[in-house]
Amino acid sequence: MKKLHVEKNSVQETLVIPLYARSKCSSLYPEIFKDDTAEKLMARVDYDFSALDKKQSFFTRFAYLEAACRQNDIAVEVKEYLSAHPYASVVNVGCGLDCTAESCDNGHCKIYNVDFEDVISLRNKLVPKNERTETIATDVNGNEWLDVIDDENGVIFFAMGVLYYFTQKNALSLAKRIADKFEKGVFVFDAANAKAVKLMVKTLIKQAKIDNVDAFFSVNDVEKDFSDFGKHKVSAKGYMLGYTDLKFKSVSPLYRALAKVADGKMGMKIIKIEF
Image 1 (tube, rainbow, N blue to C red):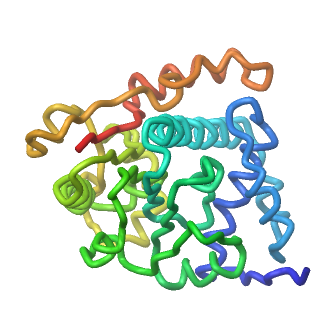
Image 2: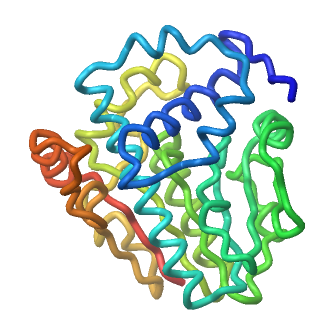
């Protein structure tokens, strides 16, 4: 099969680098989340990853651990929801080339992958679909795409590593629109406190049209930050240790100690909104 060539400094590059990271997560921490699809897709991409291969530092490996935990957390929530609602819809908001929804496919659910048109164009070239999978090319800040989602048998939305790119106002608005529109379902996503987000977005500030870093989405107090969500139940669990104790051979004691700091002082968490 012919490989898809990806140029440097292109939109495609911004998608294959996270793909590379997910494949590293899978190879380094298979006990946490084994992403077979990421490893297969890597073989279909023609891109020079040598520069990334040289950047395998202590903190880079910890970043891969964070990403593996996040995939596992979201997958646990999706599978748990599908165990109670086997014919529900699973919606990957800001999907990129991620296939977490497909990894949770129970053979009955519907899967929607939602992202910008140029992202979906690349995804359709690389990621195979079945009759229960649909891609939606749109700006998720709009409302029209929500009308496409079938929630007759329940629905679980998830956003993974996506809302950090949103302003506080836009992230909360998206979550509120989803929660208010659908009668039964959940929305699950990762978040962190303002201190952690300031560290995360240092490399994004020059590219984003936001002058104040405090405008980026963060969650310091779940009850306070989601006070406008009324009847909707909002809960949170630790991002790194909330779903697993990380007591695996692949995870050093020092990394487990850093994981406690991440969940504690950095406020890294998985938020779940039930509606």
